Amino acid sequence: MFSIEKCTLRVKDGGMNADMQMSGKGYLYVFMGTPEDAVKAEEKDYIKYTEKDGKHVFTVPVEALDKETDCAAFSKKKEKWYDRVLVFDAASLPLSAFREGTVKTVESLGIKDGEYKVNVTLEGGSGKASVESPAKLEIKGKKATATITWSSPNYDYMIIDGQKYLPVNKSGNSSFEIPVTVFDRQMKVTADTTAMSKAHEIEYTLIFDSGSVK
Image (tube, rainbow, N blue to C red):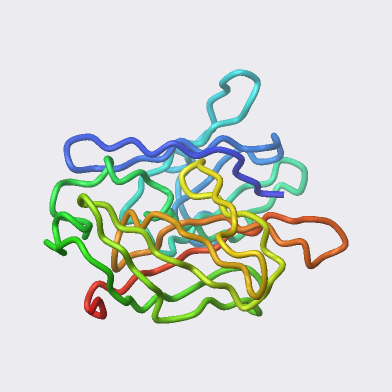
């Protein structure tokens, strides 16, 4: 399997590279392109792995975030190029990684303290879950807090930036008060559901529409 267990993005002089740490050692090279392109290319154009702490690491150029990029991987066992697609997720980066003014926050939008409504979109999971929209939005001291109500009563906690949040209600569909760190782009959250045979954490993204705040 072509499984990336850790990825570090490095930015320098306007360019980006990613160090992809692999879970296994089954691939000798990667090539930024299709398998057909890789076969036609010269070996000097192949990206070889380096070994770090017993792990294989491929360092690849990153043209843009949130963009599907063709990547061919050469299997040591099969001696064959396989087609893969890489997407470097901007939502996984901390806000401190972005230049000032490139992301929309309460402060940059100039939203005054008070209670508002905001449209919110949920993505991820199996697609069966949803959240109520618009959601309640409270602004206080340049910080935004949204009340997220799920379409199910079976969510027992949420995690945002490593912080766990518990439901604020005891009956009905699960509701949480969570921080809104960014508007108009994906914000990663984790929600734990007890609806399955055993509790299971699921990764989602929420998008809060700044233009809908009223």
